Amino acid sequence: MKNKVWEIQGSFGIQNLKEAEREVSETLAPKEVLVRLTATSLNYRDYLMVIGTYNPRQKLPLVPCSDGAGVVEAVGSEVTLWKKGDRVLPIFAQKWIDGAPNMDNLRSTLGGPNDGCLAQYGKFSEEGLVATPSHLTDQEAATLGCAGLTAYNAVVNFGGIEPGSDVLCLGTGGVSLFALQFAKMMGARVIITSSSDEKLARAKTLGADETINYATKSNWERDVRKHTKMAGADLIIEVGGAGTMQKSMMSVKPYGTIALIGVLAGGESSLSLYPILMQGVKVQGIIVGSRADFEKMNRAIEQNKMKPVVDKVFGWEDVPEALEYLQTGKHFGKVVVSWE
Image (cartoon, rainbow, N blue to C red):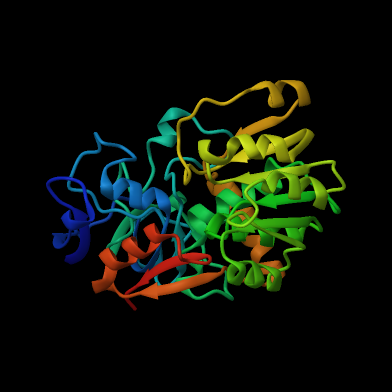
């Protein structure tokens, strides 16, 4: 069976991302599931993978994109969880089923080192899939596997928040807006930053309680203090990395948590560790989550009829343009590619 894919060919770079045709066998292992994929969403990790920054030693060719959504096309002889026609979402780390991960789990990720979801068909183990929330389209659901689950773990599993807690979300990308939605679901107060007043106004419509334009207020950590009666935020969704970490450390309350998720503003820097030490701050790296976490998150999403924020949908032919658009940072929420 022919399988159209996008793959990084020869060397890294968006210019080397090409359409290709692969052969996919219709013969399935006993526990294997063939999924007809319909959509993917773009993460900054995907962009870094394509340009060669994420893993310069990644073997090529590689089908990128860690997120996907689709429909079960066929199942192996021993599959009990799925049947033809079921709507499903692949999990990011295919071997990470529950609990804390090990290194083998973390090497089973889609979109590098394993082929990802920018393809018309994909084969997965039956435990490498979860059910799509019934109220979501595939375009919406394709945003959940990485950005949604990362935000869920940051807020729910590691955030230590409760009703009335103060949560600071940096920026208005996919993870930060998911974190805003989950934090409001839990009764927290949310402060959000952006360099765009228009984006901040849109964040208000999603429930943001306070907004800070960091382009006009360079000392935004002072505003966080003011918005929290000088106490500091209980939880910070830190997607900037080294470029914003110092200000985040000045914005968090004693014994608060910084959920370290992204490196949009840089991955390496000389930081003073005194604020962490002197205030007992917890810095928690977030690496998406397990299949069990994904299922719990989907139950919460379904119960609350939560809708992911999709900024723009590109077609199959427009993948390079979609990645370039993601790189500009103009998006509010998730960038999606859909071909059905």
